[in-house]
Image (cartoon, rainbow, N blue to C red; front, side):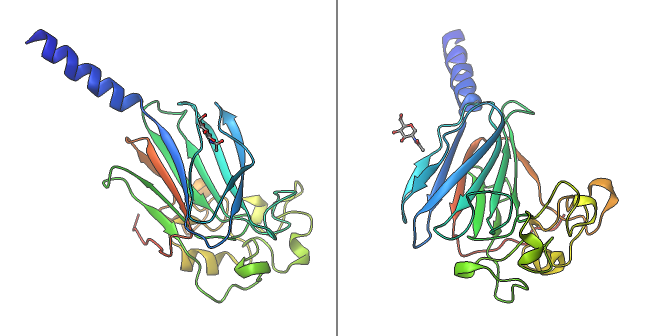
Length: 225
Ligand SMILES: *[C@@H]1O[C@H](CO)[C@@H](O)[C@H](O)[C@H]1NC(C)=O
């Protein structure tokens, strides 16, 4: 009896402590993943071939972001001078859980979905439709903070403030983004911080830390707040 109980507790502990972040590249071209870190560790400058899946080898306390580069978008500055899609994860704040979001404040180059192996956790997905107000190369779309390509030439969120109000509130093209992808950040405070509106459902905290980031999922979620 007591050994069976010990076994089940050990199995439970193993499940709780397991964390993983896999990237599935469903796009028709390879991508380069530029990662940024506040806490913990993750692989960086990772090339993922079309159709491939890569384990990002995160530490269990990783807090940071994955920025997607293609041959013509993303780097080298990673400031929105060319558009890129960004996925943000925090495994650090609450051990055993992860908070995640899709951020389009630097623009968009590939569609994204963030999901966990627990279907009770929201799977946020964004695939932009046509109609981007400031199109970039290869189907990309410039930051919602930029009214033109030249307005992004110093970055989407320059230190002195860009086209998004105080680098926090909506920018000139935020409506296209928040009307197209309800569960992705269309401006920095799209979560309702500082009282900016609309305050959309863009963050989810999941108690299952087995996470998949799918690129080019071909889907868009619309999960109400
Ligand atoms: C993660 O670690 C494994 C084992 O060391 C390695 O084969 C793989 O290439 C690593 N993934 C990345 C993205 O570097």
